Image 1 (cartoon, rainbow, N blue to C red):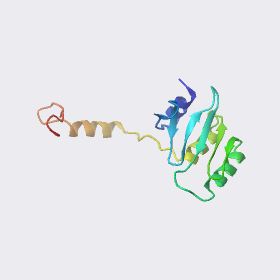
Image 2 (spheres, rainbow, N blue to C red):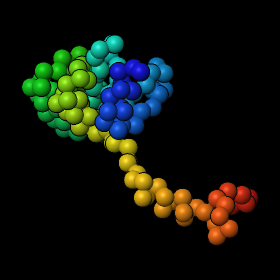
Image 3 (tube, one colour):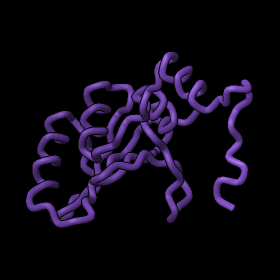
Image 4 (spheres, helix red, strand yellow):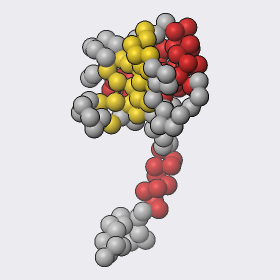
Length: 131
């Protein structure tokens, strides 16, 4: 298992394939996490809208947590970190605004299955719903 997928599994994060370079990333509202090499991950902070001083505040927190700044722009940048360091991993996740996958309990799962089951005991198929 690669490093980015291991981090995603450990913290229940969503992953996707980046359209530009076809690599696995962990997307967030303010950027994404990506693999730098076999041991390190990177955090790319690039808000879609101009957020005054956001990168400078995040950069200061990343430096204090011993991240290595890789790119330093006016409103965006990137840094590398050790995914085995829990404090660094949590800060990187928070910096990009990555969302956790929702955990469904066994009771919720059974309730949803029961909702989708007809009185005859067969599951609903959705046939004819959008014809």
